[in-house]
Image (cartoon, rainbow, N blue to C red; front, side):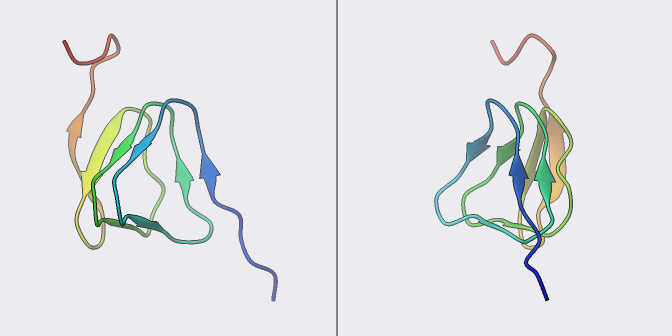
Length: 65
């Protein structure tokens, strides 16, 4: 069995202790909260937290001001 790669796009923030499981893709500008466990793909500009990580917010196109 071959391990699946993890794809992390540009400008992604991954909090301390977060775990991203094999085969997960993280979209541009996404945020994964500290201690979260990413079990599914994360959409671009999404903020996900928890175990399993779930989206709680979407970051606007221009970023947070």
